[in-house]
Figure 1 (cartoon, helix red, strand yellow):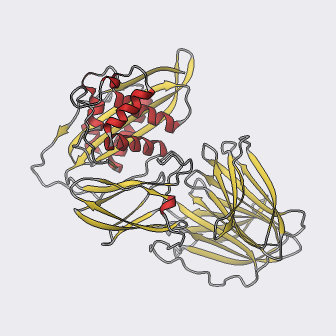
Figure 2 (cartoon, helix red, strand yellow; figure 1 turned 180 degrees about the horizontal axis):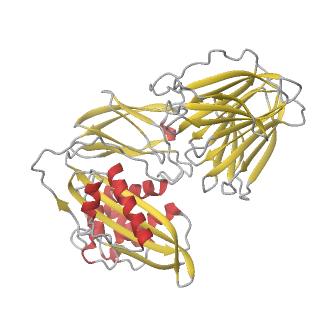
Figure 3 (cartoon, helix red, strand yellow; figure 1 turned 30 degrees about the vertical axis):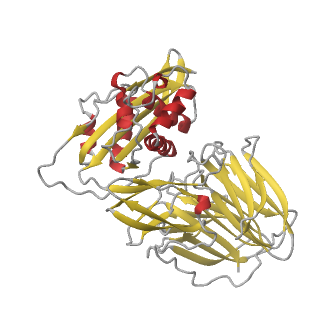
Length: 525
C-alpha cells in the first residue's frame, strides 16, 4: 500500500574552480549497504544504456511521461549516448547518509536542512573537494519491508521524474560531468493518519573531485538466481584486485569496489580466499571503466591473496580422531558473511546430525552440506517453511565436508550444531568454523567432553589477515574462566593445548581492534 511518494530535483550542477592548491585526500570506496549498492547498480545500468532504461520504466509503468519518447529530439533528458559508470566515494556516502538520516530525524524533506546548510556545504564539510557536484533526494511511505526493492523503486522514481519540470533528477543521473557518487539510504517508522508505516529516504550526492581521477569500478557477486545482474545478498566481500604495478583494492561488504588509476592498460589479478583467482585486462582513458566479477569467473585452483603469512601453530595436532560428543557454534550470519563449518569423518561411514537454528529469532537459516575440497552437493535445505530451526541426519562416508548456514532474507544471529547420531562419543575427526567476528558479534563455539579428561587442541586464526583474535575458554553454563589468550603480540593466529575435565565448555573469539573474518578449530590430541 503506497500512501504517497515525494521526489525533488536539485539545483543541478555547481562548478568550482580552484585557484589555490587543494589538499589531496586518499580515495576510499567506503562500505555501502546492499540496498545502497543496488541503487548504484541501477544508476550505472541507466548510464550504460539510457534508452533501454527509459523503455524498461515505460513498460513497467503504464502512462509514464517517459513513454512520450526516448530520443534526444522528443525527450532531451534521455540521451542516446552511453555514459561511463560512477563509483562510490566514502565522503560522498557520508554526506548523503547523514542528510537522509537528518531528514528522517527532524521530519523535513529538502536539499537545505533546517540549519540552512546546502548540499554543497554538507559535501565540503566531509573534506570532499569537488569540481562539480549535485544532489537528488527522494522518499516514500508505505508498508513495504524489502530495502533493496525500495532502493530500486526510488531510483526508478528519480529517473522517471514524473511531473518534474526539466527532469532535474534524470539530468543528474545521466550527467557526463560526474565520476563519483554517494548513496545514503535509510528507513524507519513514521505515523501517518493512524498508520505506522515504513518511511524510506534516499539522498544521492554526485561529484567529480578536484583531481578528476578516473576509476575501475564494479561489483563482485555470486549470481545465485541466475538473472545475470547483481542483487542484494549476492555480494562477494574481500575479493582482492591488484594491477601489474601493485595498485590494489578489496571489495566492500556488499561486493562493490573502486580503484583510482591513471590512463593506461592494466592486467588485473582478482583473488578470493575460497573461490580462487582470475585475470582481466582493462584500458583506462580519461573515463571510469566498469568491471563486474562473478563467482563463476574464478578458477577452481585457489591462490590466496598475498597479504601476509598466517603463523602456523607451534604444536600441531598429532592424532586423527577426536572424542568430542558434538560441537555447536554461533555467530552473526548474513548473505555475504555465511557461517561455514568444516568436519572430517574418520573410521568409515557415520550417521551425522546437523542442526541450524536462529538465536535472535530473526534469522531464517538455510543449510547446505558439501564435500571438501571439490564442493559436491551432499544435502541442501532451503527452508521453504521459514522455520527458525532446521535439522537433518545424514550418512556420510569417511572424508572432509563443509556445512554452510546462510540467511533466507534478513541477517541475524545463528547457530550450527554437529553430532554423530546415536553415539555416546562422536567420531568426528575435528571441526573448524569460520565467520565474521566483531565486538558485538563474537564467535562462540561449544563442546561437550565425555569419557573423562581430554587433551584438546584449540586454534583461533584470522582468515582475512585483518582480525587479531582473542581467545577465551569458559565452563558452561556457569562461565568460569578456564583460559584466556590476550594476544599481546598481535598474532594472526593463537593456539592452545589444554586438558579439560568431562563437561560443557565454550570458546569465544573476539577481535583485538578491527573486526574481520576468523576461524576456530577444535581437535582432541
